[in-house]
Image 1 (cartoon, rainbow, N blue to C red):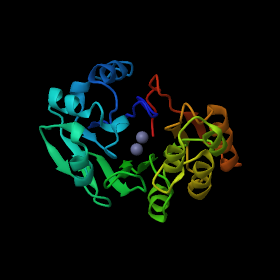
Image 2 (cartoon, rainbow, N blue to C red):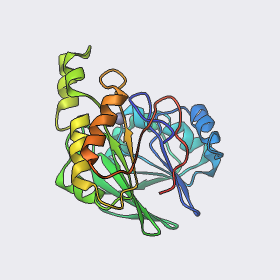
Image 3 (cartoon, rainbow, N blue to C red):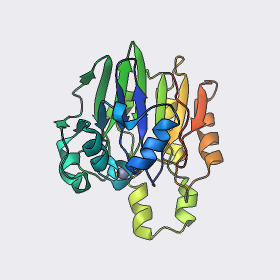
Length: 249
Ligand SMILES: [Zn+2]
Ligand SMILES: [Zn+2]
């Protein structure tokens, strides 16, 4: 996780044959700095995948793909709504359910319930290992739950504590948006999702997209722990300001 939160999201994934990122709300310079911390460079990236057009996800993507001529993969909805992207060197349209094969990585987008055009999240497979990703969604649909089953590593949104959001400083309209079916997953909703998809081979869970205003890392952590019950995968939290170390799936 190079960055996670409302000020910029970026997930780096590699196999022995290919290197990709999902989203980048970071400037090219900051992305370069964070990749350097894991001994990688932006010039090595083989592809950039997008989840949706909100600026915390695409803010840094246009300059990045232009500077390094990196192919961009996104839904037509995201690409058309993502005016900020500008002209990109290579655009590959993708669709929910259609698997993209890049060398030995299988990247499968699935539809998310979010206030964006044709938004998606991803499941990635390689050598019989599975990474499940679920951020920026107001509700967990049956389709999302099915997509995430049997993941060895899960990256799950745990955006807000409902009470902190209710009593926090956001406007009524914004609170309503966040809590809607097209908003973001609360700690409780994340816990319910975890309960539904946990299994004995789940090895690691990383909580993502935590609100700095409407959440406390401890509350998110405890809620997820409770949902996991007797299952004991490694549980950690992604950070807005610094990258996590590379994790093997
Ligand atoms: Zn969003
Ligand atoms: Zn977001």
